[in-house]
Image 1 (cartoon, rainbow, N blue to C red):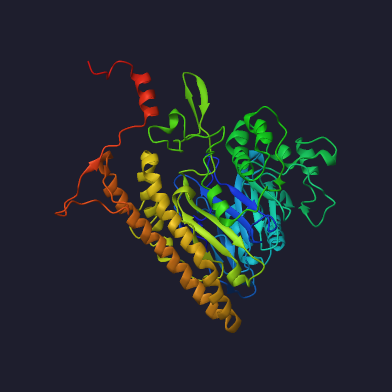
Image 2 (image 1 turned 135 degrees about the vertical axis):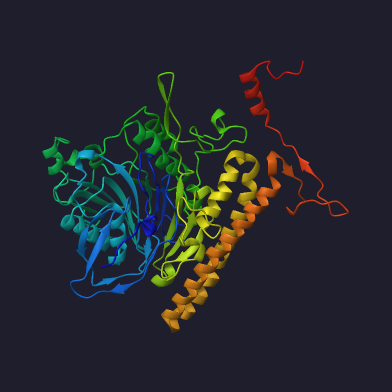
Length: 544
């Protein structure tokens, strides 16, 4: 019997009370190139990141599969193995099906502690057994019905090259198999998002093409006392995940930020985020322009810059305008409770992806899983083709984990660089951004040529095309890894001891006529920080 071990399970978020994970969604008619696009960040402190691969396989009738909980590796039970499973790399399979999630938790009394299938196993099994988004929904809901659902409330994004669905699921309590759930298709010309708060309110129970749900999704809520109105007024979100301050400001605010970037409705929705109204934002909305893969990557790097929620300009940003805040999200001072904003980009991310799915190409070529380790803002999204049968060497665990550093681990190299940049963000971020932009532009420019070669190979021999794309996936990942290691070396030298080593226009370090380094620049602090500093310290440091 095959086991799922925690070392591979790290591709799924270990959800704690940090309000983790974000999904951004783009329908195929809303995207710049006709692809469906889904993003995901796995945000959890104490979580190691590597790139999981599960090869396609066939099994004898009666084969069994042991399930181990993704979060703590507990043995959950044994289920029937499928007769055939598909190639899965990261969160995409060989048919371009992508599944992502954010946890909303919901009502704690509804978690089935006796169930076998937790949310992480459910995603992996859905990918291994499905050729389309609709099939994945059927597989996932059937599994929890048969074996029990062992997690709290989840929002799943389930996508293929033609459709994107949001499915929200809640257990029924200890010892009760199955789950209450609803799945709504995102219109092709719309964008959507979810971020740890249930977002499905009312839904059209008669629209079988765009809505699916468990038969008891409303009656169960009535039975438990969560709802007592007429069916047309039923809200899954209000029944199973009532909104509170955190759900509004830490979760829905990330959705608002995404809508604010690509629609003209940001100002209209802001009162909801600020708590001035309880009228929720729509589940999906038409963007005011076509959205590209790069747009989504950039959106995953957002810290509310330029908005009322911007965290890069106030006192908490420090001397170098860092758009990050230390955990926890809330804190107390002199008996009063305060909070930090929770943007899309966060330092606690272990890995992130933007999945690009295209119906205009063979599946082996059409699905590109743009993958990065660490925080989206501080990583490079490299192309991982959905048909790839191997991962880049540095993307595998290879003995590293969250408490075992390795110079051969991409996770640790990206962490090493970002942790240098965080404290002196304003000084150092442009050096990081230069290498990041060069690499991502290079992969973008290469994409058409790579896929032309792959398409020519595919027409003659699909297996050769898969070998080629696997090789390219490994080369691209290793190239980014090596470039990031060199970036780290460069940053150490340039910003050693809080000063800036002098550089030439091309970025190389300046030397005099006899080859010696010319010295350093002492940048000091910004005028704004000095003003705050003197206001805080008064006359203490004034020269007498």
